[in-house]
Length: 236
Image 1 (cartoon, one colour):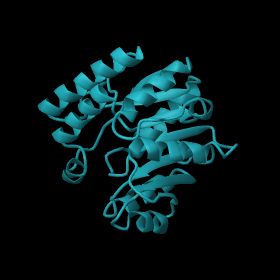
Image 2 (tube, helix red, strand yellow):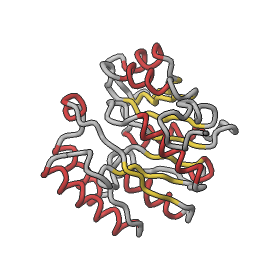
Image 3 (cartoon, helix red, strand yellow):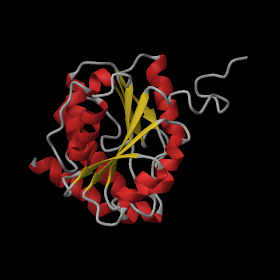
C-alpha cells in the first residue's frame, strides 16, 4: 500500500527538488545552523537572506549548507523576503517557495504537509495558521493583539484569514512572480496577504504549531513585537 500524502512513512524528501525555502535572517547565530541543517534533511534548496546581521549569522548559515544572500544593512523582514523571491524567480525549475522563520519556531513536518496540500489540491498559496487548532498557546495578551491584527488585515485585504502574521507560507512560483513587496517591516505580512489575494489564485489555510521557546520569545515573539505589528499596520 502506498503511503498517504501526509503519512509519516512518506518520503521526507518528496518536495526536495522543486521547492526553495526562503529564510529571512537577522542575528540568529545561536540557532540558524540547526534550522538550516534540519531543513536540508528534506530540501535541496535553502536560501537565507542575511539582513545586516552583526553576530556571525551569515557564516553559521553558510557553514550549515545554506545559500546565503546579503543585505549590507538591516532593511527589515519584508525586504529580506523580496530579495529571496527575486532570487528564486531566476530558477526556472522552482515550483514552490516556502517562507520560514530563522528562530526555530516553525516545524518541518508542517512544511511538508502544506506542500502536500498545495500539490494535491492545486493551490497557489497555503497560509500556516496557529489558530485553527489548540496546539499553540501564544498567551492571552498576545492572542488578543494577534486577533486584532487579523481583523485589520482581513478588513484591508478582503480575505478571511485566522492568522495574518504567521511567517510560514507555501507560495507557488506563478503567484510569487506576481507580487512585489514594498513594506520592509512587520506590515509586510499584511501586504503579502493583500498582493497574493489580488492574484485571484486558489488558497487555503492549514493548521500548524508554533514552537514558542524562551529563545524565540526573546528574539521577537514578545508582546511588544505584537504591538509593533499593530503600529506598523495603522501607520503604513
